[in-house]
Length: 592
Image (cartoon, rainbow, N blue to C red; front, side):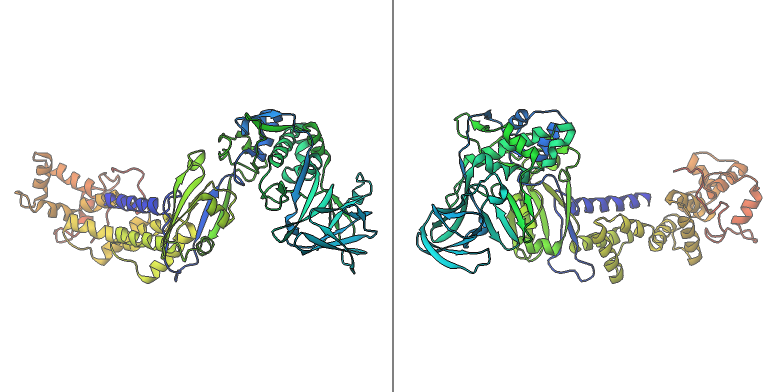
């Protein structure tokens, strides 16, 4: 029986290994659960962002924890390139994506459109025909507007006032206030769409980028060593922008995370309060690396991608994948992360009706758990679909494509409960038990509580007692016998204790010896066990010791023990008619 209990645990372990494997299958239902809350799937991963090129947290870690300078940091992440200080300060063009397809409304001091002074505090420019724009003037962002003149595409709104004072910069009117920009604000017509483009020197552009991409406070981290991370960020941002792109507006870059985050020079609240977008530490880092870029061996400026956190390994791509020990720096909450989503929500976001199984099929082989997910397969009632890790990350808003998935759905939990009942209790679960334990497994994503409850249940203990009776006594236990032995189990006894008690009884001795040539005589039976005839005293002592678990009880005479197991008429009594002479508690030692 001990072997059967172990087998139960082995089967349960096998079931769980299949159903709960975080990099394998997580089985689930094809329909909604009727007996349990919507189960969840837990995604545990590493890093934040695409992971290509430099990790910003890793750069900080290398600067502060490893003492690296910015050139060494850049060389580590951007293999195959070299740092060169020959880019100069060319003009940068930034598409302001929030204004795409909208009027360009600008307020400021001494505004001009093209080279013509507006003599107003605000102008509104709107595309009115192919390649042509009409300008209106007004006292502020809300008008009223007066028609003023027409201008061709690629004209610009600027301020003739001193740009050294942020309050003199032209400001784009927005719903919550205004945004000031260095340089000029150009309006263009491309394919019938109106675009607004900020044109300014690259070094001025970086003043609105670097503090948005890396916290300016990093400059004081590690006693000032964090400045090296800000310098690395300055070079990476400069290189990325100057490498250019292919935006339909004609601009080299944009102002969102699709390119690099850029918020101009300052923001003004509705009450006029100004918040500068630049900072002293980032301005210092930009100035210290002025004109420096990363170039390929061909001389072309490298498009130096970067992300917040690599998780410990960069993703590869244009630049070789590298281990990122700096990413584990203190304060990086993205090095390891966890997100839990309802299974129905995951199905909805992935565009499938339900989830029967979800499996990571392949990874890139770099880092913990095998690295970033390259292929993930979902089976639903509609069939099987395969997703890339990047697609899953985007659909579920995960921090990265480096993740594992774990959890138990209702079908998986139901299968585990049925297997446990059949293996432990030898029957299918009743409706109440099935519902209760299915809900417990989906809630905890584990079956240990359920297995322990079934193994320790009265029903299971009664089954064990009955099996031992059949084997040793060739009969079913009477109710009082079952109650007695189950009580000992619940007080701490185990299967070897039970076997010692039952097999050592007089009834078991007579039953086991009945099929021998000795005719069932206990003394002859013992002779067949040991191969020789034993003396009456030795035989009696052996019987008593066996009946009490293999040990002689001190203070209890042999005659008294015989009386306990024999009736007054001298006939042998059955195993459970009289309790054995041992305490109903876990023995201090046992033969097992």
